[in-house]
Image (cartoon, rainbow, N blue to C red; front, side, top):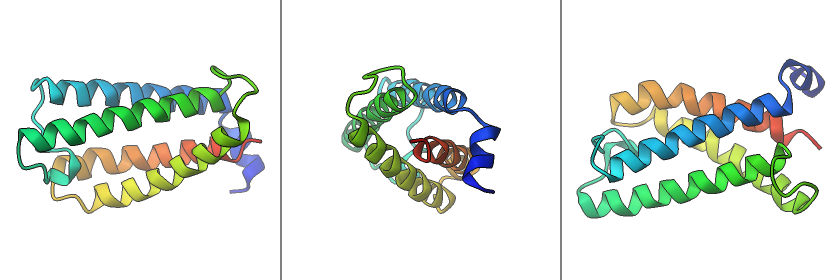
Length: 136
């Protein structure tokens, strides 16, 4: 698929809206894990060993998710319009790389739930972030 075909297939706004929605839901999930509403055994590859790990790694997850939302909001034109353009473009490509690596990591997860649900979800996110990254 050529870049121009991808651009006509999905708009930058739609891609941004989907990414922001998914990342907002991820923030809610990580917050519910921190609040012990959800179990932690299906995140981080099922490798968290106890409450200390949960607090540290879920806090990292929340921070990364918030940063991702800020970068996508800027790229989609919702925030910082016309400002930080180079930083946002760079951040979008970094996010794409992280989503590709995250998809591979989720696929290899020892948690069946994480592998089954998060692998396709992060794969879709990688494609959507790529769509934003190719936008000037």
